[in-house]
Length: 478
Image (cartoon, rainbow, N blue to C red; front, side, top):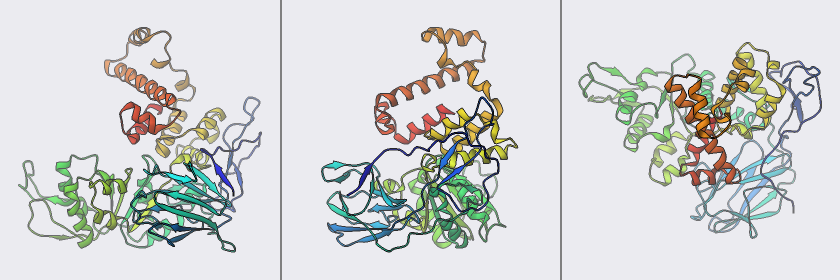
């Protein structure tokens, strides 16, 4: 039995290789692709080598061998990442109440099956060993709650091919983690069904939604964006469905809502997980009946609109806690896309850096090799958005941002730090913000170090939610 227990994947580095052409639109993906990252001179003789995710070479059958769901099974062929749990979005859906809604994530990595525990409440075990992430070779049995699952290699089965396209609209990447989404995106662009896009902050959910719109039959009609966190709860209904004159204080004129403004096109509702529970039945009706009623109105208005929603939250947990209606969840998740975080998109940092440089009409070789090396190995809690900001800042400021005195680097104790800050005569608001930024950066890094790099334990010690901890850390590193 082969069981590989590991925590991270590191890109392999090789010695100096000079390479100049850009990555083509399509290519026969090798195991390793070389991209330019720095000028080739006496001071910098290292260009980065980004290891490509190996193409799938195996198919696995996952079978429940003990428990209430005995004989339930699913094939994992490398075409996508599959989930196991109670949630309707799981490829292998179980009824065992001791299994979490999203208990395991499974994907093919070369000729092995990678299984990752999604912080399930009852854990995942091989014998008495609780695992977080393992590589399985076939024949292993895992215990999840009161259920036992066997993972067998399917002899003679052909793994799903990985597409050679490296972009779908503006969604770009050379990693297998992002490329294997392209066939799904292409299919969803062709059909007119609601879509739910899930992913961490900054993974590109709006970019995906825009690509689905631009590549679909509604491309010539409006693409309207609404962020549930950008409007107060009292005004969301009016924003979405519109209002009649005099419907409430301040409604001095009739106003069309975003559903009407998006007629014929796409309405992208961002952060749907933050939609107040009392408004969810009205959104559900709009989806099911294709009609809305303005606030203060007495008639329904037909709206031919495709709805694409996105969230950074775990909607399954929200449903379980009663904060999100399960019927609305099922209606939105007719098509479901789970975007991988940048730290799991092996090879995409370099490709995205080159793309962002070209967008800014800059030479990718302007990025120093040392800086790019740091970016390749970074966790990127802010994901693609954070990387874009880092590239923009590097191109604009270069060495200046690395030599500019920072309040957290001032010598001496806190009083000397504050004194040195006051001495440079900054405006009050800017000076105060620098102190707060320095405190936040130092605090987060110290508490993270004290808990062995575990974001979850560090967030618990800090008394804040894990997602909020990641968000604060992303902002602190920008």
